[in-house]
Image 1 (cartoon, rainbow, N blue to C red):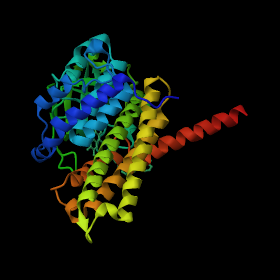
Image 2 (image 1 turned 180 degrees about the horizontal axis):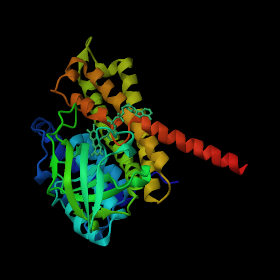
Image 3 (image 1 turned 120 degrees about the horizontal axis):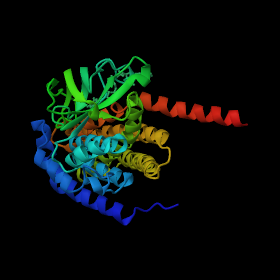
Image 4 (image 1 turned 90 degrees about the vertical axis):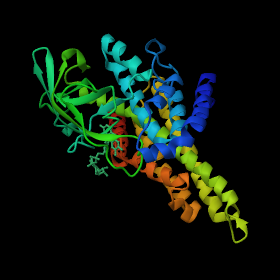
Length: 387
Ligand SMILES: Cc1cc2nc3c(=O)[nH]c(=O)nc-3n(C[C@H](O)[C@H](O)[C@H](O)COP(=O)(O)OP(=O)(O)OC[C@H]3O[C@@H](n4cnc5c(N)ncnc54)[C@H](O)[C@@H]3O)c2cc1C
């Protein structure tokens, strides 16, 4: 067993850490206040290979693998979680097109996503009535000659108002999960419109919008995968996405820990540094230990995916554990900063707000526990069947 990164993975980590330190961290607060990420910054990220980390070079990607993707996303999230979620969804959209798309779809869309020509890609699964229960979606796609006509409302779509291409899930029949299909809808398609970005607790530079599809017409060549294959595509994409949320969580937790260690060494009370109090030392020790454990789970899931081995359960565990421990860590970071942590003057307040959603999106903590428990029970049933 090897616990070392390859030279390529180390290079990705070091380059991304430098980019995050120099180009993202100093301007994160300004982006949050403006509720905006500039397209020029996205293009800079493309030049650093961050928009297609696990995409083959033939399509303009970095072809660096899933572990490298987790390493890069962790660094970006530690500097600016809004940029990290934008990066994560764009990578996810390219990956899903690469895995399920036709040659024409791959050649048309992936280079624009990874090269930064598009601001972002978007992933439109959720609806007001279909969150945890994604199969409850009501958006419809009706066949009309060689085209499909899409009608419905999507909710919570990251970068939905800025994306060049949106993966839209819609019902093509009433056959439950087998009645869902997937379409690639370009951002400027007539009939597609976006609501105002939600006023969120965190990730404020990232736009989260409702999308309305009013007789949106796409050709059959815009269908992604087979008719009825949409739910499977969504679940496979979310398995990979969960590795990303785990990495984002670790990035925020690592940044909060770094800030806490340095503040505890500077701040004096009772004529001593906070770091000299055992109660504070114990907090730092727990934060560091949880981060190491979470990161090990994320890397394990990433490695399994990279090795083409089953990784769904491990990705759910990594997302569950990393998001819960990262939230505990950012909470303790605010505690270590005392009243100052409760102000926007210090970064820990932003980490606290940004981190909360990691326990909610791409499947809540409760849904991760369902995924893990189902896998355990299935394995138990299989082994009982064998014995
Ligand atoms: C900032 C942000 C960005 C997002 N980006 C996207 C995006 O780009 N694309 C997209 O498609 N979606 C996106 N989402 C949607 C996100 O994935 C959903 O919010 C999430 O899946 C939860 O769905 P819900 O909000 O409808 O909550 P609900 O499903 O209504 O859940 C409410 C509560 O009930 C619990 N619950 C539900 N069912 C069960 C059950 N069976 N057992 C136990 N507990 C249960 C949940 O865990 C939760 O605590 C985003 C959300 C946010 C907040």
